[in-house]
Length: 382
Ligand SMILES: Cc1cc2nc3c(=O)[nH]c(=O)nc-3n(C[C@H](O)[C@H](O)[C@H](O)COP(=O)(O)OP(=O)(O)OC[C@H]3O[C@@H](n4cnc5c(N)ncnc54)[C@H](O)[C@@H]3O)c2cc1C
Image 1: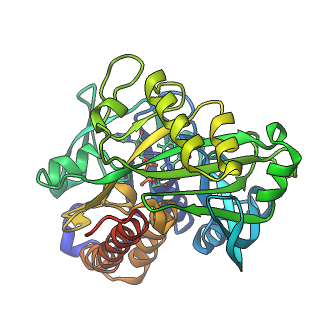
Image 2: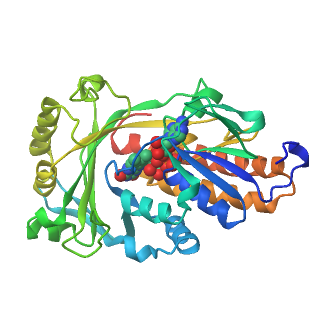
């Protein structure tokens, strides 16, 4: 392997990928299909587990499955044909035809994981430092590996991003997302019918809740075996962020309190708010969810996605608010663009520069759109 950068042609590259979730896997699969040699290092030990459930299966995600995996998008997606807004009374405020396709984080992760060679996916290996000029990663045990390109797909809390851009920090919004999933089999038939084939919303003055069906825990899309996924954006106003994000062990978390770790008083307060303010069908869904959890909403953007031979992608580079339904689609889009630009350019440097320009512009645009959408919906002046 050569590291004379300007001379190097971007064919049959060795690519070291830090992070083995959606962005890392999509990058690995797309690069391997073009004849490169990617290796993924994922810090987690054991299988990655869904944090919540639902993902809007945007067109580019479905196309990726079709082009790069044996999994047909239809087999792991659910759909709705109508968007419906409820009034607080439960009456239908308005509705319109809209075709949406959804999946679950775990079903998509399994599909991507099965499409990437097991022997090139290493779990329990954390990248603790990078040398961008040589695409070298240093691991927790002090060992080093060097490749032609190093991709950081380490998510919103990426340590590589913190090393390369220490001044880039998440800008927390003044609201959070309460989330949960509930098995379809536990819903009454009237609640089930309300959500079947619909993407249902309630827009209050300082809150927004939405719900849609996603595949079941084993990936089943058969009615009766699915799960209802809900996301409830609620303003913090007088509520103390640090109290919400202090978990059952007394640890203050920055980004999420996962299922089972939410303290009782916090959970109880939010359930009371559900009963006081939500339309009854959403009250039922929220109060009957076994393990509600909460995520911080924040914006994050890097000035550049590429530094020397390191490329940051997915949430490692840009985090847009969930209203854009763009997180996973963006990670997959970054992966595809990186792989394609490597095939379209004569030199590695040109390819990385081109990828940086295209995807950074998109990242900036989607983060700004997400902020606008979120602040509008939550009535927060921006
Ligand atoms: C376990 C898990 C469950 C999720 N569940 C949902 C969900 O249900 N719904 C939803 O909308 N979104 C979910 N997300 C977020 C969603 O996957 C991402 O926002 C989006 O797909 C972008 O993916 P990403 O690969 O850029 O980042 P992420 O999905 O955040 O993945 C980053 C990966 O990098 C690994 N990593 C971080 N630092 C290092 C390091 N230094 N060395 C090696 N590995 C490292 C992390 O362990 C993680 O697996 C989840 C993410 C994870 C990791």
